[in-house]
Amino acid sequence: MKVERHAILTCSACGVEGQHELLYLSKHLSASRCANCGETQIYSGDIYAEYARDLAERTGRLPVRFFGEALHHPVGLASWPFKALRKPYGLLREIVQVSDFEHSRRRRTPARRD
Image (cartoon, rainbow, N blue to C red; front, side):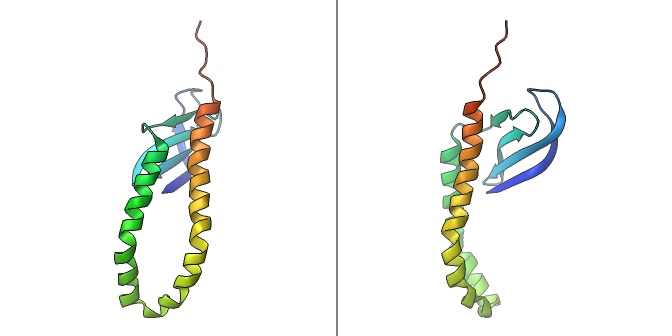
């Protein structure tokens, strides 16, 4: 999961070229939010399901990554307990970011066109 905060795009809602936050899950753009008007676009059906898939993919790669790290940097093994202790906080931060995109999309009410 990655959040890019300084992308310059033209908003389809307000028409202003400015900063957007981009949410990438599984190396794919999943959502964007305009810093000017707050308009949030979700590019997948269910952002929570996509986050769960992204998390499962990353978790599945952990054993290979840890084994490779142990082979190439055995001294790094000493830091694993600290990484394990910090991981729940990192996951909580990710969940908050994904939820923030979803909630900002739901807060925005569609503009009425008369």
